[in-house]
Length: 136
Ligand code: 9YT
Image 1: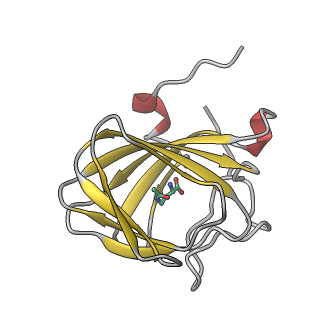
Image 2: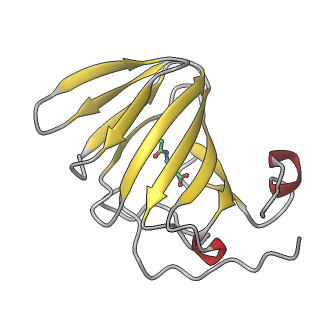
């Protein structure tokens, strides 16, 4: 069994600060844990407005707190996101996330992230990122 706390993990290399200033993510479960998915608690900063396109991954995102919207770019549909809402990028959907307030999200990625990924120019994660070294 694996037991971890957010409070401990965010003091380690599991906490990634996005270079674009839009979010941080504490990656509680990673590929090395062997579950077949990764699990992250992600904070989207208030006012963030950015495009993503996870060409190499499927992602489910559950909003724990905060308010914003997600817009899918193929059909220009906007969906309000607030506490209790799940959105699922089951079609590798190109999308924009806008945070009206700070948002806390629980995110699951398949295939699992290895640890250090940040968005490339397309808003995707590469499959080749190096694993983090977790000393905890
Ligand atoms: C909601 C979302 O996809 N935010 C970007 C960060 C990502 N969830 C991550 O790397 O944990």
